[in-house]
Image 1 (cartoon, rainbow, N blue to C red):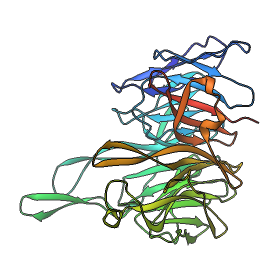
Image 2: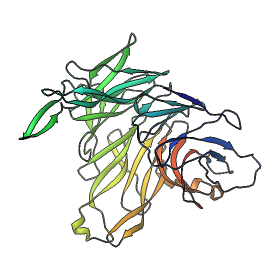
Image 3: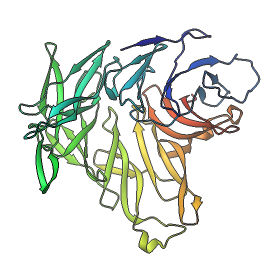
Image 4: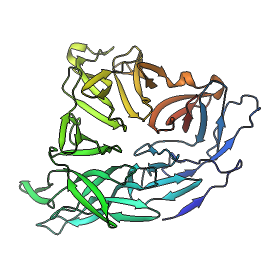
Length: 407
């Protein structure tokens, strides 16, 4: 583990790490514009960032650097950020101006600075002596990585989320993998079924338990402060999603299709994600009758009722995260398409903020003088700050931005 202190020009400010095109970490410095400064279109030289504030608009903190990976990015209420290094598979924690190398691949963070994830360890797969690198669940806290306990007979698994009470959820197995021969000379690893799991710390020891009543082959992906847990299918299109609470499992509905993929839950038990509605996408190039690509719609589920959050006039949308204020972030199609070749086209999407039945383009909250376009949303915290991806209008470079929503 290494810690690297970043000096701020304008006091202690948040610095974020981005992964450069070559896959190397880039330390980014937050440069605060003077309050009365004239609007300046940001430029990016991989070493500086800036905060842009315009009255009536969101405050945008721009962190420069070429970005090619967003795996595992999460934002806590304390403005702490975790991200995975693209090449190493490990991660970084950014807090109070310090970038710290983690010793695991992070998946979740709570407001106490505890990070959960997984790390690889070599393990022999019987009956041969061949060594495989398998995921093991772990917790990182105050510079120390702790491997979470496992079920008897199994070792591998993943920790995917943690709440502020230090309750961890993920999955684990109860037996080791076994090598089997499918055809002569060809072997494959027969893995045990994934078991949705929960870890609690008792007397400084992490104890594992199964989520009673939860189907196997699901992963527990999110947990709120009420210990309501989101479960999602682990294979294929992750077609099934469930809500688990104290042994009661509720399957989340669709909007008329076959598949539902939940993404996040807040403390009120509101769930967001994407689900199919039984329709097929209209393709501007291929015959829609032969495309058979389902339409996915962003949804909000609460107390048994599912709501279609809509689009920007296009066909599909997805909800990424929800906070305790009821803010939902995601992406939604517009009616326009981007044509790559005469045989390929994709709908143009816009990042959205949804609340109380109203969907707005996140870019409408950004002053045009900021000189950026937000292209993707990554996470939102309970303070109303959004972690997003943006590009500079003049240079088309990518950057990470922190969006403080206007009052």
